[in-house]
Amino acid sequence: MNKTAIILGATGLTGSILLKKLLKDPVYEKIKLFSRSTADMNSPKIEEHLIDMFQLENHSEAFKADVVFCCIGTTKSKTPDKETYKKIDYGIPVTAAKLSKQNGIETFIVISAMGADANSSIFYNKTKGEMQRDVLSQNIKNTYILQPSLIVGDRDENRFGEKVATFFMKTFGFLIPKKYKMIKAETIAEAMLALANKEFPKQQITSDEIKQIAQNAGNRT
Image (cartoon, rainbow, N blue to C red):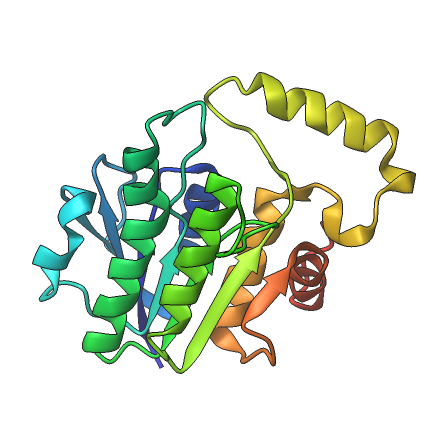
């Protein structure tokens, strides 16, 4: 069976890795990319939609596939304005979930974060938690919310805080519980692909579970 996938955030760290994996996967014959900027990759599989992501709901007709991978996300340093931050980390994934439900897409996989909690007093954790809550409320058949800890990989931008946290985790890793250990973007992408092809008994998946799913799929990262 040839499938069509949608990726939101294919220009980001995890999304770009996922895109490369999907391009190599013979199960997927078409990959629709919804983004404000081009992924700058040439393939007959790719169908790019360069749009205003804050108006994703206006592209319902094109938003049709077998699975949606939502890799959208920003950071406090990149988006200090809280209103804009919420539009990205809450608004886009929730709109995508609503479109998925509307168009009969049965698999929706989104990257959230460890510590997400709709009742949190911390704005960033609360935003992620509210996103999770409202994505789940769409009752899409196969909904998977990944809650990774610190995501590491080769990024274009310099993130000083991430470098400090990475050093700490490497130095004191033996003291850190499994679900709090840093995780490679490659591992997350591998787990997302595996979840799209095989059902998992949980909807909210912690960092250590993401690693296990990836390992079971054959990735030993």
